[in-house]
Image 1 (tube, one colour):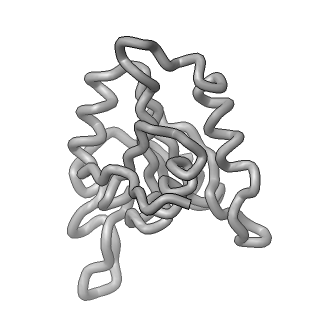
Image 2 (tube, rainbow, N blue to C red; image 1 turned 90 degrees about the horizontal axis):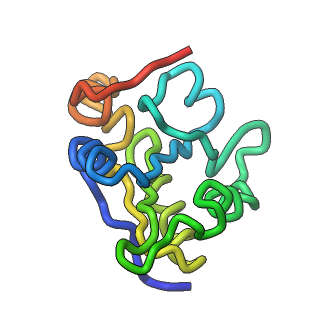
Image 3 (cartoon, rainbow, N blue to C red; image 1 turned 30 degrees about the vertical axis):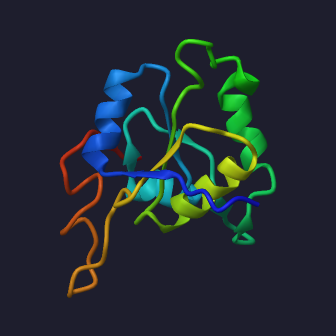
Length: 142
């Protein structure tokens, strides 16, 4: 296990990285219910880190991310591997999931440090102080 952490990006920095590198993959790691009903960043791929009904860490998470990246086939000598950007509700789960990827020898791992909904405000509301939605970045919901 390494002491490495994924690089934290603000939502706007993450969006810019996605625009600058078409190989970048934005992975929403929230539960299926959050992804579907709260909404998600446009273009994100859903791979839950922890999901219902058991609320345990997905034992296939690293393998699922490897599949997204075609087992490393999206790595080149000149440009390295495609960036993996993780997003959750507030940046806590994505930090943990990013550590798991780094432990599995992924080398370009980022996480949206404000998450999709951001921190709770004084009235216990999200998306009012920070987060992907707060910054007006593209998103949708079912």
